[in-house]
Length: 317
Length: 77
View: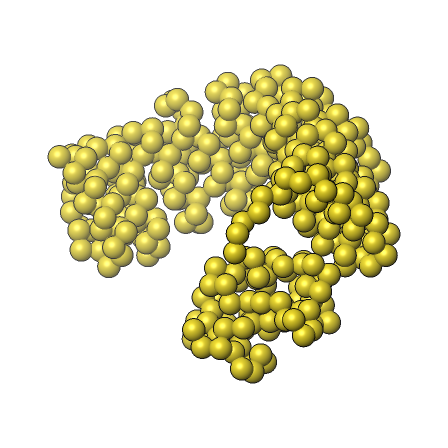
């Protein structure tokens, strides 16, 4: 079989003709073929299919637009996101998250205050990747949205912009009633090294939700060594091993020699993930005081733990 | 490769009521890395011509109408 590249204008004409076919399956296949061309000339034609009477064709158009970028694509996707058929709206939202061209932002910015929370969520999801500074105000406003899913995306938009002026709003979201919003906001604080962000992270270490404590422990490992070391050592008593894993990793990254004994005690844990990370952290700290702990685990039943122990012993020398 | 004589006993089964290959769709045929799917000249629908499958699943995942089902043998699940 000879591969024939799609380059004939007549092929577009045929597909355009098929888009007007009375059979929705033919129209759907035409949309798929247009997407396969990967030619930006296909966008206006696919955009037309977003208004097709058949929900299947509209769904295919929403999926197909995920292959393209730019203002025209974003405009069509914004229309699809308001479709009465949930599948179409969801597909449009997924495609919006693939946009990379900052020029696609204007129609999304107008939808962050749409009456339908799904539309607001999708618009913010699209804006996140575009990283446009003019989306900051919309993002901060949407952080007060009554719907948690919208607030999560708003935190994403603001967090991606890494703007210090958004810090008070992000810190405020770290106290949100919804744990997923708090988790996202805590993760978004990673860009800032200010004392306000650090204090918010310290507060997050006490959060009732373990996933929030887990992300706070991880983010604190990226801060310069200071008060965070003692707080992270305190977290090694957390009832969730997932939280302890992150605390151990952060203590390793920060090379906290004062934590060697506490990290060493994690090597007796049943969870092999924790033993593995503890061994890696002791290797990162690379202090001879860790030798007795590591030597005990040379014959650990988990090969990943043994591998990290050997690496750690090599680091200490 | 062995020819699939009884299409209902092969791993990849196509629901002909849902399949839109007769309208020009060739997604499952295009994505199959073993090239074992074909469009029937008789029915215009997709079918598994050769009884050989890696159970890699894109034919099922990419089918726009959910017409394709890959039956994974119990021991491979």
